[in-house]
Image (cartoon, rainbow, N blue to C red; front, side):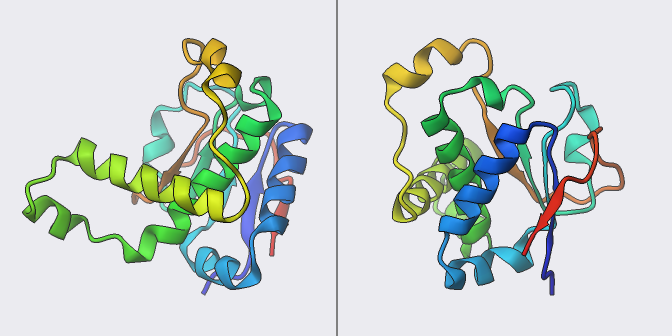
Length: 162
C-alpha cells in the first residue's frame, strides 16, 4: 500500500497550494486517496507526449496553472484529488452497458470530482474568474491511471505528501 505520494512540482506557489488543499482533506478521505495515487507532477512544458505512458497513477498539473486565479488553482487541485477519491468506486463497464459513451462517462466522473471538491470546501470558480484563461489553457489538471514506462520531464522531486 502506498503511504507517501511523490510530488514533482516546478512552481513554489503551486507547491504551497497543493499542500494547503491536501491538509484540508479529512484524514479518512486521505486514507482512500493514498493507495490510489503514486505521484503528482507538474512538467516543465505542456509538451509531454509520453505523459499518458507512465507506469503509475498520477495527478498531472498544467505548467501554466500558476497563471490562473488562486480559487481556480485550489479547486483544480481538489477536483483532481476528487477523481482519485472516486477511482475505486468507478464502474465504467456498467455505464457503457447502459449505453453511455466515453465522453458522457467522463462528464459523470468530472461531476463526481466537482462534488467531492465542494465537500472539502472548494467551490467551482465563477466563470468570470476563468473565462479569460480558457483559450490559453482549458485544462488545469488531470488524473492519469494508465500503464506504461516513462515519465514526463520534471525539474526535481519537491517533497512528499504523507
